[in-house]
Length: 515
Image (cartoon, rainbow, N blue to C red):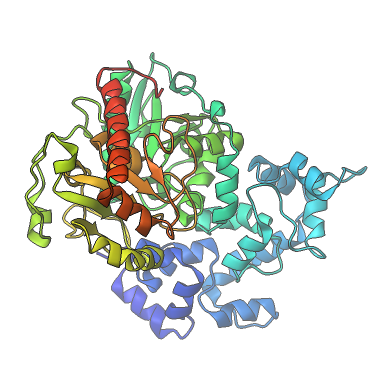
């Protein structure tokens, strides 16, 4: 059901002022949300000051009088913003993001503060003659400009702070994100006890119309907190938070606060919430989430330890919530419970759940949302995959994945396939080497399935070569063949498999080494 009326969308299309093809190309989050361009523009785009067409953008740039009336107010504010770049409040606003790293900038460019001007001002002024100069180890000025070609007449970092985060712009390059997370000290991660008190009740919120997996994470967060001595309850009703006297945790703020009921929250409600990030740093969804984490007075949580360390490095008090197969939790799956939804749409070999690792019916499996990069990688591996018994689930999806979608692969079904596979193949969705904890740790290592993955950002709780195996895409065909065909490779598989079982046994016994 459309968020705005069909009549309003039809009127916009007939006005001659809106170009849906151009709008979708310039603002890629439209496709990511699975919305009609006209629906997106009327619902949120015009409130963010987005242009309705190339003509509208160029009219503003060249001072013509052809700006659609519904854009005039917001775009005039943007033009005014360009003239006050160095006002104190803006400098303070940019500083709060921690994206400008004074020490890094000084060492990289040999700059020092001068009387009456700090280094952040120097960086902003330098853009006119040196647009390639970066703000710090994370933010690339050129990358932001290249990813957002409609940004004109305003410094890219200023645009990000004033508009880009709430617009969900891609802000951080995969390479910069990799380096930033690799070099972030994971000892910076805060304990859960430093963010929450066992004397307060905790409300965990999620958006009921969002991605099914975020409901799973919200449910698990409640179970995990209760398991370690807190008192937490689950809800998708934001009204409950208005009178809630304890702590509020929002799972996936890029959904709940941007598209869900959190849109109606007051500034005070947003500032008092703790936000649980689920997103990779190079994505638009992370940009949307970051704005709320920066605003919070209480801090953030993350399901990936390297990401949690990165947020802490940005000055956000951040804790790590490890997704574990805790007994009785929503990630503790009984064997043999694969859903009819999957068997109706896919051929599944008989899942025998053998005690012997080498007897698992599938040699390898790959489960992940398809995109151009993954499709190309799988095509390159096709000859190798064709030599073995392989289960491949790689649908193309847009928008939230909801229960009932025929391409949905639930966490339980994922676990059943992994328990019957020797190798779980991981191909990153992009050039970021973010370690997807759910896929690699929860669905792979914890099920005794040996993960073979592209190089990942290291995390302190699991070790490459011990709990999983890394290889580049070019190396994978030979590596997979060796692991599945040679006696030496099979011994290596068995060794890593046994390491995974040992780690699972520690968790099953109640050892809290991950906290």
